[in-house]
Amino acid sequence: AARVSAQGAPRFPEDWFGQWSGTLATYAPPDSVRNRIPLTLEIAREAGGSAVRWRTVFNADTVRGLRDYRLLVRDAARGHYATDEGNGIVLEETFIAGALVSVFEVGGRVLESRYTLRGDTLTHDITWWSATPESTTRGEGANSEQGMAVRNFRVAGRQQAVLTRRAARPR
Image (cartoon, rainbow, N blue to C red; front, side, top):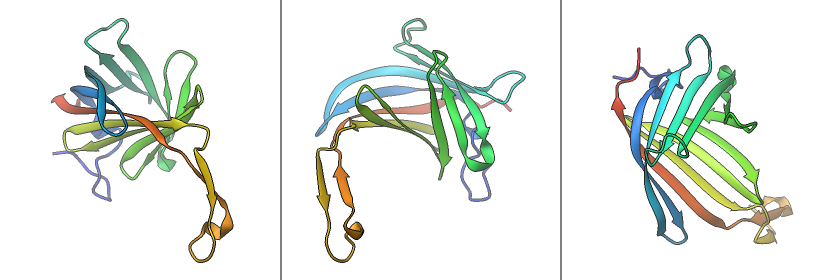
């Protein structure tokens, strides 16, 4: 049984360690599946350090499909982490309410990446939208955000990987 935090949630990142496998699906609105590919994920403490190895392999291709990332601990007490992609890109991450979340912009798109763990199922969701708002409105009266502009963004796509633990986490 997984050890849990005072709030009853799995401890991060310890309870996430292990070998994972599953399928990644990419969707376009409203619900068309663009592709499905197999993937594996290894999450493990790096030897002699506080960083965590976060190694994903897509389509069993350990050359072109390899993403050998490192999860860096910025301030665990405040939920601050970062993913070092090993190519100069570092994504700031926040562990909040049982999810590891990052939001970043690249190529005119804003992306939200969210990992969640429920039992022995690890889900990675990425949702993206244009950085340019589709419309802007202003409310009036009660519950109108005090008349501030509300910018609307239409989701352009979603990617979801559902993985199951295939090897016990190291002790």
